[in-house]
Image (tube, rainbow, N blue to C red; front, side, top):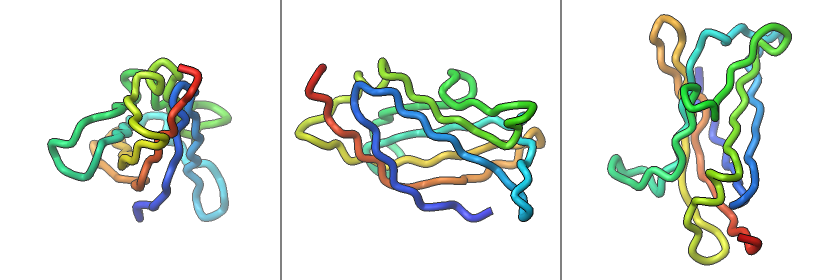
Length: 123
């Protein structure tokens, strides 16, 4: 699987939600309900860079759906988490990636890119 480059924007103080669909070549959903996922947003690409957000299936910020939505992964960063992100100036630039792990332990990076966190003036 090829890692897709996708830049995202998160508004500080707002809930961030994004749905990712896994479809076969016939646009039929692929059952990924047994997978786990992690999304990390970091200050930059260095190994020791500040971890800004750590979303995963364990903490409920990454949700694989079952039944009719079995091919869907939802990223859900609550407003309480985005409110706590420090933004100096109007925009904080960061980087992120999303990796999924199958039930057999195969890890695949599916998304990677830049993340702009836009300051909330209502905090």
